[in-house]
Amino acid sequence: MIFNKSFLIATAVAIVYSGNNVFAQTTASTETYVTPNTKFAWKNTYPSASTKPIPKPEWVALIKDDPALTITPNILTTDGVIQNADPTGNNTYCNWTWDGCVKPTDIVHCKETTVWGTSFDDGPYPITRELLTYLKSIDRKVTFFVVGKQVIEWPEILKEAYDQGHEIGIHTWDHSELTTLTNDMIIGELKWTEVAIKEVLGVTPRLMRPPRGDIDDRVRYIVNQLGYTPAMWSVDSQDWRITTGGQTEAGLLGNVTQWVNSLPTLTQGGNSLMHDLSNITINADIKGLELLHPHVTLVPVGQCAGWNNASYVETAAAATPAADASTPVSPSSTNASKATELSNGANPSAVTVSKKDSENSASLVQNPFAYSTLLASLLIAVFYA
Image 1 (tube, rainbow, N blue to C red):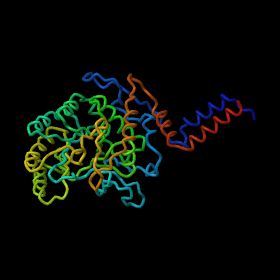
Image 2 (image 1 turned 180 degrees about the vertical axis):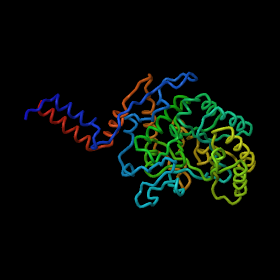
Image 3 (image 1 turned 135 degrees about the vertical axis):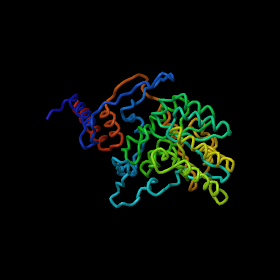
Image 4 (image 1 turned 90 degrees about the vertical axis):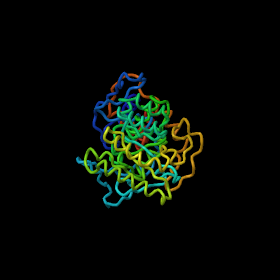
């Protein structure tokens, strides 16, 4: 048979971009990128509200192949339950959500009992300003784990928090349960949020918090490869349940009173979770902090973990302390800086791209067979040229 060079090259490319089971089953759809609003002079465009944050191929390329990537994603039921995909039913891959399983890479407690890690998730919202006013009145700094979609909706509030000295961390793009997502989707959730934060503030967070604490060894591996450290918590205010059921303001204040009473017996510092979701949660949380802060020093999560001005890639020159059960192993500076360099390439104009093309390109990066097939086809093309 006589092979035509152009035909062989075209065949190789077609193989790589095919949607068959050799690479990944994908459903073609259109991903739309838009300029968020006029509150900020945006240079980049971001996933629209109706679409998922598909990762750029160069972000996927940051993740080195590892057995952890083959862990099967869990299942999110229609009523929000995270079901174990492990057929044994065991917590084989250390999912925090089910039983609080942690790894040395996770920040859980503070290193010192004289400080208390204090953080707020899910913002920013306009009501966040009320919390900022209160924190300024008591001269305390905290961590805000922000959602990417909220960042592009309220960039000026994020900047106010940062300018007032509060720490900023990543809380995914749209508050998705990470262990139920594919590897590529996890990358998109984290990196798009990083890009938005970097555009507004000029810094790249090193802390991330998984929504609902939903992290396992697969998610941890991806998080570490992207240069982040998982930030969990030791006590939960359950403030968000005040509006949905299962918690009351009185119950929250009772919990905080228990935290205060436990301070003399702690061997590690406390690290609490709250939410700047609404006036209901913030009003209850402020009352709780009024009970707590006279007895212990409220600090951001990075400081709680013993970090020295290392909350962002750009300021992390100082070495972080050695890890223990509650202090994270610091991600390699190479991973963090490389991830940062590749996160600054968001498209500066409104465009639409094919989700199928993006996912298949990403699959090529992680699929050795795809490389082999492409290389063989190209070699044949050159040989018969």
